[in-house]
Image 1 (cartoon, rainbow, N blue to C red):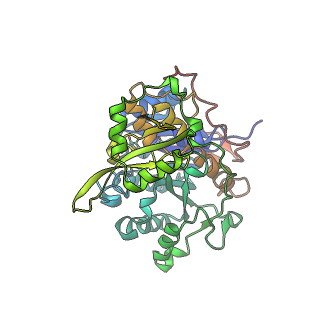
Image 2 (cartoon, helix red, strand yellow; image 1 turned 30 degrees about the horizontal axis):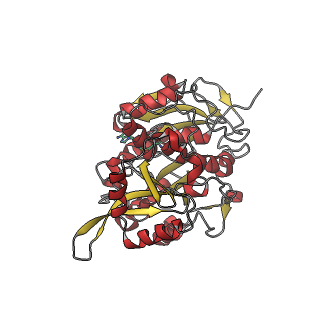
Image 3 (tube, rainbow, N blue to C red; image 1 turned 90 degrees about the vertical axis):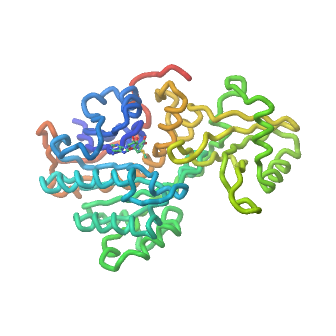
Length: 412
Ligand SMILES: C[S@@+](CC[C@H](N)C(=O)[O-])C[C@H]1O[C@@H](n2cnc3c(N)ncnc32)[C@H](O)[C@@H]1O
């Protein structure tokens, strides 16, 4: 008999990237997102979605909507009010306060003896500093009050994929496993931001903090050029549009480009628009260029950002074009079998909102699975929605990212 798989709840599920990262060793028993487009994408990719996906506002859910007692709750709550690029109203901001809708449900499940023993809260790295750090301290206080030990990690997707995407993962557990903790911060995941957040905690909260210890992944091989579509398969900008992009380059970035193209070999990078302080006061629009083989962080129009542009230079010839939805999906670690929404804006929104799949897989493999390993179960057994009782939570083999997608989608 194969060991039963640990069950989890996926809040703010979007396109299901946390699910893909957790892989086939886990059993998704409940997923929620309020957005119709995201829910449609989730359904298009997971054949069992009808059984557990609730398209609803998290505030409209009640504990009755959530089956059994899950082992893990994953919450990638909205980041707009926490993003360094935004106005940073914080966790009480109009959109990011949805987190408290999730937390209210965790408290209600706890009152019924059904709280998941492990919770992962994922958000932008700005959560470490929003409201002068008070937001993260408030989260730690809520977790401590509910009996969880907790610790944050800052993981940049660039360790796994050619996209710069630092994100904060606050991992909370009622299972104690000191073998998974370091006595002190460890690079690279306990970044200066995370250490400063810990230093700000009041002493009683510090005792609940854990320096979760994860190995650094093997060196990434893929560079930006390897996720791009063939040149002939994409539509390029007219020369005048490319000229306008190059005109927007700041002097430093213009110099970088000149140096990179001096030898005449092919050079690939990304461009994105930014408002920057102007020497004469006010702000001025600039194009910023990355030529280090890594794309800038994918964002969404709702996050105040424009679509990234690919720049390819060969000798004197420079060409530009928008990053395609499939390229954005690859930058998130989504397999090409993942069915993207047909509209480019919706597909880019889905990718820009997501959590990078290999980052979740790394956490799953080196921390989450071990936190739920046999011998460390609270009561030695957990009731399933079906009433089946399981005694062993070993997740088995490594995450099989993408293996449980519905079907081969049509190529874009
Ligand atoms: C940061 S994204 C998470 C994306 C997801 N982790 C993924 O990888 O695709 C936040 C998600 O929360 C959803 N959302 C925002 N406010 C919500 C609310 N009040 N109730 C339910 N879902 C909400 C959004 O539609 C969005 O898909």
